Length: 220
Image (cartoon, rainbow, N blue to C red; front, side):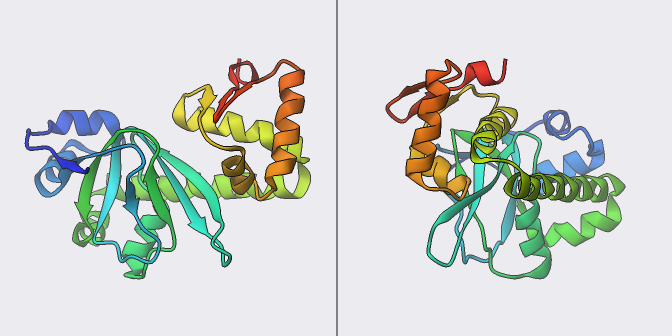
């Protein structure tokens, strides 16, 4: 169940989470936004919906994905504290239906910001424009990294890169999920991923258990 908090949110805390943003903007963010708690597994944004508010992540982790024509889910990236979804921003600015899905990977907190402020803040607050541009740049760099991975890396190297990227985004060294989920993220098959995971386990680099992969040794 999504919870809306009634307590006042300190603008200084918002600025701590989003250090690029000037204090006056953080004060306005607190005034016009809703501070919301999103439970693990909750869909924050559904594919095909119009976006009326966009999330700024105060705490937690969200998975951003999209489905292909066959309905297969493909992981795009993770959102963590201090980040905003650049693809959601694009849909807001173009007033088009969302082509992504955002799901909470763990219990998380967000600021839910009305989209009507987006264009106004671009003009009013230089820091907001810089923040948005950096969000786009980060996702563009990740896209280039993904393209390089698809073009030049073998699947075993891509699998290791997947865990390292997951660690950078979530700070976790344990992945909880099915082999099918990883296969979907890497556009591979479950059989290939399971075989490669077993190889990594035999090499002592990971530990496998039911719906749980400990990959701490890969990121030491």
